[in-house]
Image (cartoon, rainbow, N blue to C red; front, side, top):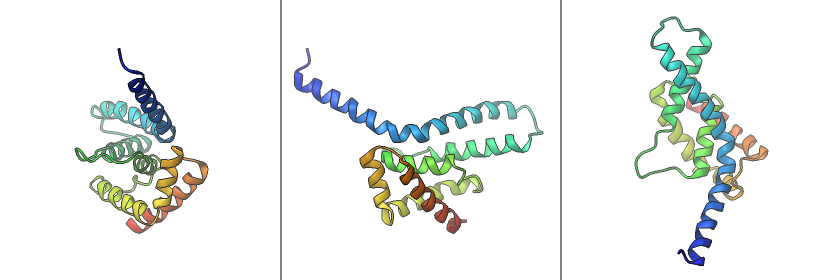
Length: 150
């Protein structure tokens, strides 16, 4: 039978995990749907050669989001960094980039966020949420970075 102390530790861990998911849910719900559509269309597209523009956009975004989710082994991103990176992908900032530039965009954005915009990361981490104010600031940072990256 587990001790009372170990039960309290487990409960605290579960509560912390639940709080973290609030910010992640805001961005993960959108990426989950887009990736599901991507997988479905990718399976369909291999049988057809004539794809309309919206299907091509969906396939392009899906491949970029898939690339964005790749992380080096034993080097996971912090929750607040994941939120910002996924947000940038689901809001179309990777769409104009070639697939082989997605990692460079992600690395540069993270450097900018960790350096000049650490306050934004701290706010997301501490509140465990992506508030409207934080989302507006993130939009400003990502738009500015995307213009300079291109």
